[in-house]
Every structure is written in structure tokens, then in C-alpha cells.
Length: 292
Ligand code: CP
Image (cartoon, rainbow, N blue to C red):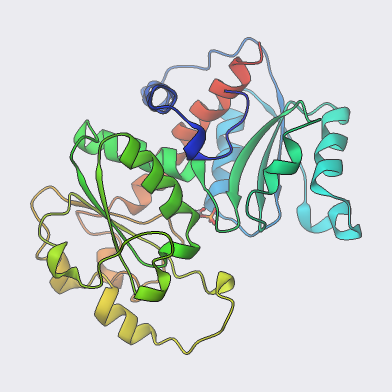
């Protein structure tokens, strides 16, 4: 694995290897890297979890983290993504972790760039490191993906998390269903009512409404969305024993999920954040080891 760009590119073997290494890291195992690598995190869109989690993962596997402030970089003078990454490569970077608002921004880096590229989110495209930490969370819970019923709820068409997870979970044998308003279904066939989904879901994965990616500002009522598509206390009470709640966060409390459910017994929302560090250690190690 030279880069991590999209879950569509990963085989099941590659996914399972990363999950195995995430588990080893969580169990206290050290990095298998032979040397230290130089890594920078280029975030052209806001982030709390992904950026900090990558930084922590990089430190824990012995990388040197070179600071890069996208909001104070020459990208603001019009420098292209290619020229930015090539410049960092010439300075000595071995890998760059990038979040950008353009879908598939990484296509312009496929030729001529030798440092590793890890996609930390491209527009409404893919979010592979989030998907791998979600898979790790599910695997820890159920031990398998085969035949699990996973319901992804919310702003599907604008969600890179939904696309990455749908691709990966389906490949791994899970039964993925979608629930959202008709206009947010995008390429997917979606349900529009909880009735067929709430009782038998093993995982309910909620998504943030991505207002920043909506082209027309339609009137949107938080209250009516919560009533129709939100996970309310009444709906949570209908979930089956052992079923879990996930959300990539940030969470809009009382919109996609009732405030009091964010840290309820079934919720793995903050556990996902913790698992993200181990998953990202595994991603970085796998990619950098491939270069030794
Ligand atoms: N889940 C996620 O990508 O969160 P951040 O935007 O805070 O990185």
C-alpha cells in the first residue's frame, strides 16, 4: 500500500491487516518501523478529531511531525496542491496527510509525487481513515462483519463517511441500509422511515448534516428532522439487545441524536475517537513500512 486514498482501492486483506495492527497497538505493541519518518498534516478544511488523532498516532509510532498551517501557507497565494506537496517532498517529507474540500483532489498527485499521500477527507468523496476506525470499532464489538445489519442515517449524498463505509462494509459481507430524506440519498437506494430498520439493526450509524456542502440553502428545521430521522430516546428503546450507536462526529445534539443518548450505554461515539488513534497508527505504519 503506497497511499491511502479511497476505501474503494483496498482489498479485504489490506483492511483486515490494518485492523489487526490497530488491535496490536491497542494491546501495547510497538511500531515495526525501522526508522523515524517525517510527516506533515495538511488540513485545508476544519478538523478536531482527524488532525489531532493523526498527530497523536504519528508521535506514538516515532514519526517527526513537521508543522504545516494550511491557513497560513502559500496555497493562499494560489499554489496548487501538486506544487505544495512536491515542495514538502523536496524539503524531506516522507508522508503527507491531507484534507481538502475538492472531491478526489489526490488525482493530481498520482504522478510525480513520491512521498506517501493519506487522504484525511476529500470533499464529499471519501474518508478512509474514519472508515477504518469505524470498522475497527465494529470488529471489536462483533468480531465479524458477515451479515451484520448496519443502518447509515442522515446526509448520505454529502457524506464521505457514508461512501467509504458503504464500500468497505459491503465488501466485508455486511448488509448496509440507508435512511434519509429522498433528496439526500444520492447514488444509494434509501429507506424513508425507521419502522423497517430500528428493530433489527446491529449498528445504527448516524451522520452529521453537512450544511456547508449543500448548494441551495433550503429551509431546514432541526426539530422536524429530529422527529422524522433523528435517533430519539423512544427509538433507542426499540433497538435490539447488543446493538450499538455510532457517529463519526462532530455531533449536532438533538438533531441527528438526542442529547441524552450521546454517551448512553449503546453509544460508541467517544470510543470511536479513541480507536481512531490505533487505526491511524496502523495506517501510517503499513504505508511507511511498505517504503522500507
Ligand atoms: N470525524 C471527523 O472527521 O471529525 P473532524 O472533522 O473533527 O476531523
